[in-house]
Image (cartoon, rainbow, N blue to C red; front, side, top):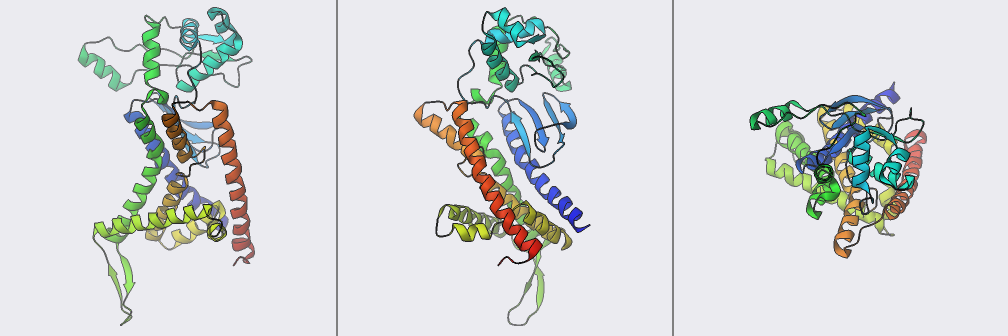
Amino acid sequence: MDIVLMIVYATICLGFLVFIHEGGHYLAARAFGVRVSEFMLGLPGPSVGFTHGETRFGITAVPLGGYARVCGMEPGPVAPHIEEVMAALYARGTATMEDVAADCGITPDEAYEALEELAEWGTVCGPTRADKFNTYRTPAVKPTKRQVKKAQKAGAPIPAEHALGEARQLSDPHAFFERELSQQYRALPFWKRSVILLAGITMNLLFAVLAFVIIYSVMGFDVQSQSTGEIRHITVAPLQAVQAGFTYIGMVVQAVVSLFNPQTAADTVSNSTSIMGIAVMSKSAAEQGFESFLGFTAMISVSLGIMNLLPIPPLDGGRFVVEIYQRLRRREVTMNTLNRLSWAGIAFFTVFFVIMMNQDIQRFVFGNWG
């Protein structure tokens, strides 16, 4: 039963923090008019959920982590022939990459590259598991109530509804392509891209500061007088609670920075914990009451936010560094380069995870970790 409770409390804690982190990316992207095709809690895979507007919301089969699929984040230049490939597919509605290649007079590989990028944009729908060949389709389009009201108010035609894979004759393919491109992350200026990348981290830190305000200024806490031993329940001004929050954030920043100092790295790692430690401590915090659990969640939120600032792909901080490099060098990082950097980052964190998991097993299972 204890193990079940640990899993439940850890899932609540981490699920909520991932939700607000990815929610930050989602809200920033939508504020800048960028399409978000998916907002999921869990690792990519089979999911249940619903579609609102152009975004599918849901929970995947493996509810660990989460993601907001912001469209157009693929690095490198736009694929060649992408506009004519888009027009060819929309004219057919449903087609294999070979069909599109024949219509455009290009190679199947060139058609595949363009179609995959259009699928990343949310402009077309990629192949499903049931497809025998690489089959692509036009997306289903159902105008929202807001779009209908806006069109009626402006006296404009109501947007048409289209089924998945339905052929569509585009009156102005170039204008349609430009409109699709304008809804992509890649079409934004540097500062807007930066806001989207850092929005998740910002949400984690803002939540932590808000939690400190709730705990110290609203709920209050007990203090014991050193002279009389009397215990009093007090609250502090919100500004003091905010200062306490930023002080804690500063402490976490120092701890993360110490990971890169050979003289302090070992101590920092020994004082860190893996998902197992979070599960154990989340159960302990929950048993002490809501205030304790809220404080624990706030501390994990700060750690999650600061760790995501590390300049290592595929973390947000790593993507931000790539954006800065591209801005300064006026040169785009290729997909292959970003993939290699991401795999190197994953390898680094895998080793880090194994080390922390081992020490948590020693600490919580065998009880022999100092």
